[in-house]
Length: 215
Image 1 (cartoon, rainbow, N blue to C red):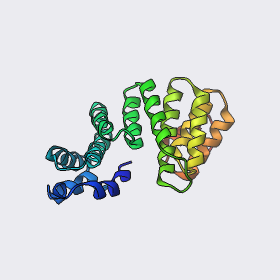
Image 2 (image 1 turned 120 degrees about the vertical axis):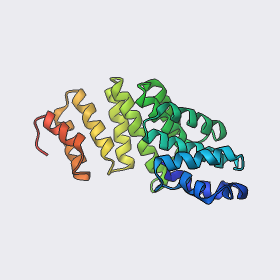
Image 3 (image 1 turned 90 degrees about the vertical axis):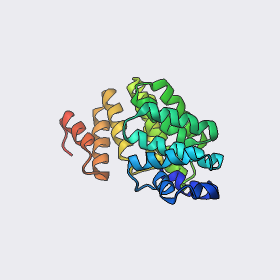
Image 4 (image 1 turned 135 degrees about the horizontal axis):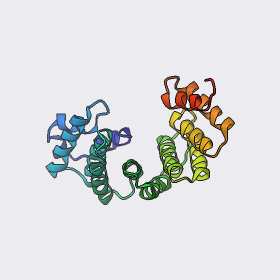
């Protein structure tokens, strides 16, 4: 979800911060930077003290994204706490912190953050935020499913698919929830739908194999 911040950061980072070094700025906010480069660049910008409040929040959020990719979930939570203290209306920060809580098995905290993220993003068709909500709904569905709340999970996965029809993760998540409920036909249909979108989806292939169904 790093892309949500790129244009914002370019617009809101103050002149002296841009002078910190262009390389550090580029590493922090570029979607093509490695995770280590993002961490190095964002750490330099955060420490410079030369950014606007929103620009600093963006740097914490971008660094958290890189930490998440590296599986460093405590660092993700710490950085998103800082980001939210500076910009409490960041749907992206809530979603990413929720993801870190989810990976740590803290499902109630994850659900609370995904719910906050959803509440901050409108479901406007065609808007970037539309896809953002799709991620948050699917992520909350994952947390509900692992808590054994399969009906709530299915509702969230369905909402995610309504917002982003090609979202493989939501289809495979909903398929797993259907499978947990013993609804084999619905599970098979969703795994097959996921494979149509992404023929390489191992989760969908494994699901079909487990259910004794063909792709």
